[in-house]
Length: 255
Figure 1 (cartoon, rainbow, N blue to C red):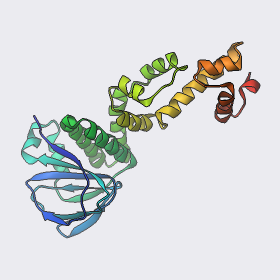
Figure 2 (figure 1 turned 60 degrees about the vertical axis):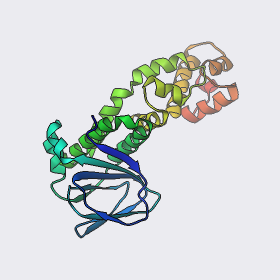
Figure 3 (figure 1 turned 60 degrees about the horizontal axis):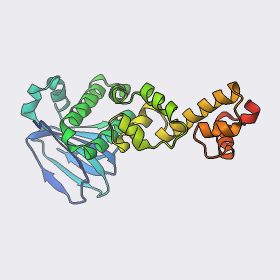
């Protein structure tokens, strides 16, 4: 059963003025939309979101290059939801609000997931509302980030990924393979992985290769060329350059 209508849209430069009988949440991942409600006007951007209570007149005009998440929330459905009263409180008045980096990153990730799996719009909408409720009600920018981090870490099992990587260091590793291990689309996986670890998946793989290589360099008698092959480098020269960049010392000197 579909409770919400959630869409990733490009709001055009045509001016629109209307009201509707549902609450609406608007978050942008890029671009600008000029929006006014009952005489209060601001710009909806990646740093600024908007909550529109039902039956409130509003006008908007996009820049034509925005990417905007628009969530329609039927008022009657809120009573059936866990913490529906908290969500209802979000819409006690028209408001614009600052979007912290963690919430913006979560919005990016969920917009990508929505495009990959439109059938998950209910689950995505609920996650988005939980994050927003935690952020606005607690008035702590870290709160939304903690929720997003928790939900993402449930899907990204780093211990499992590390175990798989350690068995495939000599092979070519693609983001698509890692994403499949977590049952995520490559785009969503890339975004979530970077949010959780602070680095891209391929940078993480490179780091894993080099840290394993350092153990072999220091504690084995294998030739540097053999070590390079075992951790996935095409030749000793590229291995030595990467090793020096990462550890600030050459593998031969480190040995």
